[in-house]
Length: 151
Image (cartoon, rainbow, N blue to C red; front, side):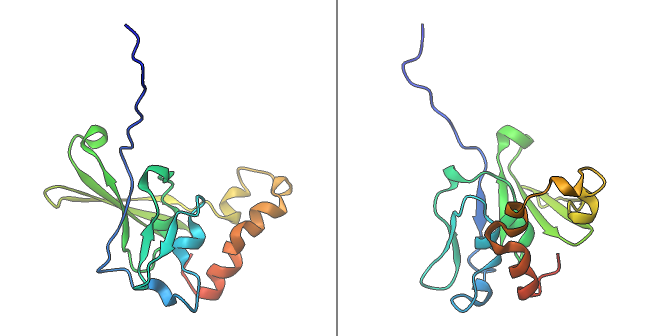
């Protein structure tokens, strides 16, 4: 028997801790999380705190998580993926990204991955293959330098 409807269940999504978010200078400055989101899903509430428009639309790319200077954003890992509820946080640096997972009992596991910046990508891809679009995507390269964020 064929089912008449197909349901897509969104298992993961980001969570923005309103107690940790400080708005990163909004409204005078656009926020790093908003600039980093490829889906343009993060907006600033009237109270100056970041919020996601709809978790179902989130790509789970972790760009906002890695760039948040307050570590106010994480991905909630559901039981279906990890075997128990958990949280994934990340912090991007120039040469690496440090990932921290925490399970429901508070047990943490930390690991790191190498950064995928111009220097590391040069060994994987011919730099001539990059386009101006990549360099100017949402003005991120310039804006992160202007904000003084450590990536």
